[in-house]
Length: 366
Ligand SMILES: *Cc1c(COP(=O)(O)O)cnc(C)c1O
Image (tube, rainbow, N blue to C red; front, side, top):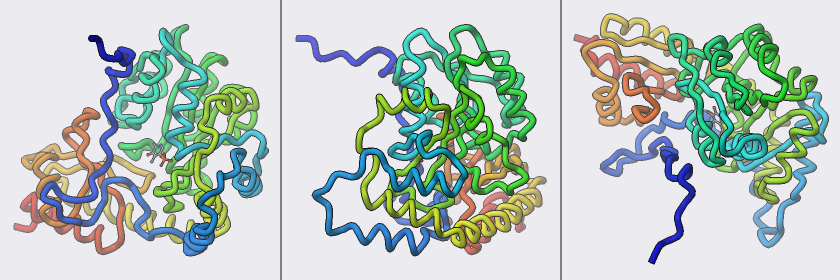
């Protein structure tokens, strides 16, 4: 008897490995492995979420009208051109699913977001990996990967897991050089951590070009990762295609209203950004002081810091030792980053604690 056979490209997928929440021996420790907001969630968002416990039997609004209108008003966009999904992860899958299939190619960078490869293989397309430039996105390397089979290019800006940032003129150069039938997906999961003058121009491209999709999420600065709300913005024809394959009811009623309340709570977003700017800067400076122990901070503009271990202590050793000190960070050998740890910028105490632990682990205290 033969069992049902998965499509071969499905079995080529390496399952996504989420950040850990507890140590291997079951202790709950500070979780700095998933880039969650250390300040939590907006109180207004939490209150909005709690208001919906009495209507669990109802389906949510499949067209997410309230959320789309709130987003359109907040960002100066056309509500009819907003797609949404169960986290921006779903929106990324929709982009691959609507525009690529077997025989097509999807390009992303070597140290890119793990979901890009899953989304690519899921639809039977071929992942094409563009080399990095000292961990950062290399526009020329991406362009040299383009063939007549290229259908989609995924670029996260800032990028995860590196935290690196590609400036506006480079994004413009990438877009200008891509064939107009290639969809450029600009993943702005961390865009809210940038200052206004660091805007990479993606949303203006999505507004004006026929082939640019910008994706955003409520999981990071808005602190709503549990609720799975993501969205995207592109030309009407792009959005129309994606709507045809999305799950009809992407997120819950409570999630939608929590997201709408989160948009309105600009104080919380501002506070979260200021916290991150202060402690990311501090953290990178402290890592630089550990340079003689072989530690190096890859320049980050996100809410995490990739730390490379190029000396006596390896990233794997530091990962285990940090866990003993009470901090779970992200070690990513499966993504070719066996030499680094991605560490979320936590509370002040957590940042100070991680640095103190790294000093002890590397012997910098001695
Ligand atoms: C966290 C993250 C996302 C967001 O995922 P959600 O599904 O919205 O929670 C998207 N892209 C990148 C690069 C990320 O790091």
